[in-house]
Length: 527
Image 1 (cartoon, helix red, strand yellow):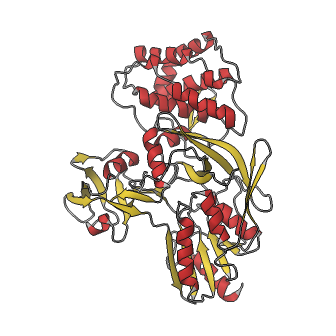
Image 2 (spheres, rainbow, N blue to C red):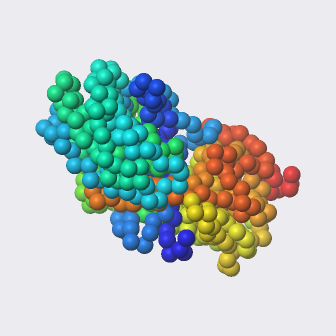
Image 3 (spheres, helix red, strand yellow):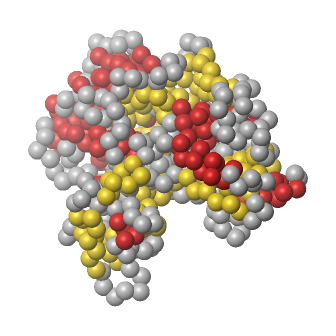
């Protein structure tokens, strides 16, 4: 791998998450003996930066800049066990949009071909036969879009269409897949289905996501529609334009404030944790998805958004006008704990992670601490170059991470001179929400003998994805390699095992944070 390439670690599956209005933003569907994971739903609806399953991404030099500021960015919720496949689902989570005028028998599928050209060229894993790809593409797109009942009604005719099709595509030309059967199947849907149909844009996105989810045995290769992809790229820049509040979907499906950022517009306007956003600029947003509401709340700095808020203890909803601003996403929290112990918590490996961690360490080390606790709990990842740079702050030398592509070629990233905290006693905290970049750093520090790792086994993400911005602005992430620890261990689906185990508390950094207490005890006693 060329050093100039930027490598990102980003999440790619939807589970319990905190979203943040500052950024952007498997369960099974059955047809016959075949299944579709809810990775389709994940790809279409989630922001890969903030969910529970994660992927390392490599951005080549010719990829468009991702420095544009996002609007509002999701952060992960505390995890108490390794993220798992989403629960079973028998109906699409998002209902089809209102009836569309598009001719679904003539959908422009050039982006589908573009996606499979890249997958065939780069994917590190087995590829489907052309006939299997066609069948999966047709069946999955219909079932996911219309639901199980409608699909079951149409399935016999769809199977007849597939049986009578004669694809002129060979298995080594998946980008030239003959989609006549797809066109015919959706022509049938238009003729016989009486419910609401998707737009051409929605059908195209669903079909690409379906084709990947159903045929590739890899949960991290995935497709992201244009709007979500743009916000995802903006999020990783580390800044955003919005109101400055962390948000989440509550149990009633309403977006609520998890907490406003100190001193930012939401805080200045008086928003409180627990406030529910029920309207944006006069529009009722109850029932809309997290992504839809966030897209309405975010916007250019200097503009005003009016939020209708429902607050516990207040009889009626009320309006709050907030002027949006440009805000840097806070990713580092630091302080001196009792016992003269330095504490640094890094929440993600965004563009400026190394600089922010270095600044925090510089200030804390000036106070001659007894030791440093570096907290990577619930950190889902970020840029790989930032992970290497952060690890380098604590390592005098040694390998940080190794990558191996499908051709068996290795690329090794090592620590260099300039370490900031080489000698001070160090403890690293991890849990099941620590993924990818966090695991790279924890693994490097552990296997180089630099620190004791305390907490729970980490998530276990050990593959590398290359993201491509497609011609319509959507994004395709393709698994191209695997990464290994300095001692050549794969942590994929295994995670980093801590040296000292301690359960993750419900309230990180609270009075009952047994992991943090254990870290303090180790630094003070060496036990």
